Length: 190
Length: 230
Image (cartoon, rainbow over all chains, first blue to last red; front, side):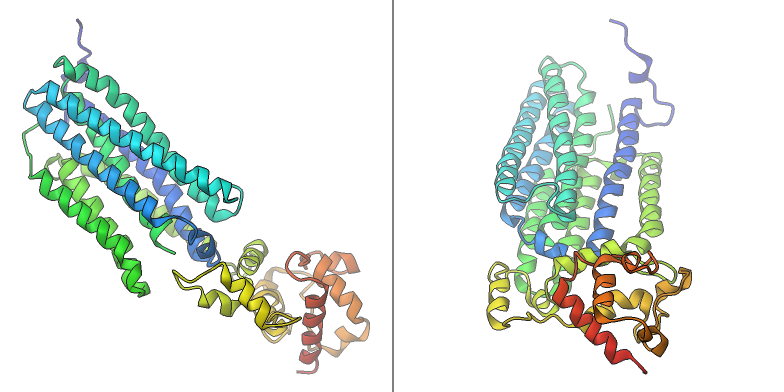
């Protein structure tokens, strides 16, 4: 099969695929950064948001942080296995990471369903608007990462395209880092 | 495939989990500055551990750091440029009435808000306040005037607040006897609740009906009388 030149060329000293991931993350920093910076400045200007924020459940937030940290751990173990040429182990760790993503989304569904039942909807006030927008955009990234990982795990199982295990891992760690900041912003600062 | 750098991932993972425990425990001590450190200081340390070791940025070519750093600088520029106007609700020549009203609506009473420390029973607080203070639940006209009205009318009611500079006609001067010559209380209550235009005055005076009921507007008018002849 014909290989696209981008997979083998590396003009910058960084493999082209990995450089592309860094560029994606650079745009993600602006997307999430703009959203979170807006949240922070509004939160400082609106002391009354603390009343709304006191209704978020710290334990659910902490559990989900633990789930994502663990999934980052398995993602980096997948990367390590891929570099040793062990596609089967890499695929196994990637599947565990997908399991982490599924756990995260399941917990989030129950959390949101509970909050919406209580009347805390996206239009309730400014705090809840930011809460659902920021965590929702993050959850979409979790879902997208899990889907991409499923394709890469399928290839890795057969020992193909092992360099992609690292690439999806870098993206996954970034999604983890975003949550590391969302957690104190939405759950701890009350 | 890249150069093989694999630190002890298990150690880093355990460090991350311990840091998570610290950020959850932080608010239970009850010190605000400590909570800020355990929440955001610890988040920075955690993010750094992940970025350096899991994303391998520690061993990456400097170009990648510049790419990511540029985005971070753009984000900081955005924050620095916009935040002064969002965090403050009035400046030398402008007033954000909607934001002031939103804050006032969200915090029913100042003392109550101050008492709402993390962990306090927020559901019980309004009921207690209602039980403790009979008909007029701690509505202080003077405080309201200084928080809301003073933006344009000035702290002493002379019509020279920060928002006045950009207004024409100028906001009413309550210390001026001429102001009181042709107005009764009902007109003033109407102006407060329905806006200046409703009584044939400047439309720059917003309608505060969503913030003050009839009785509260009357209390504010009573306070305005005390400014007369200052």
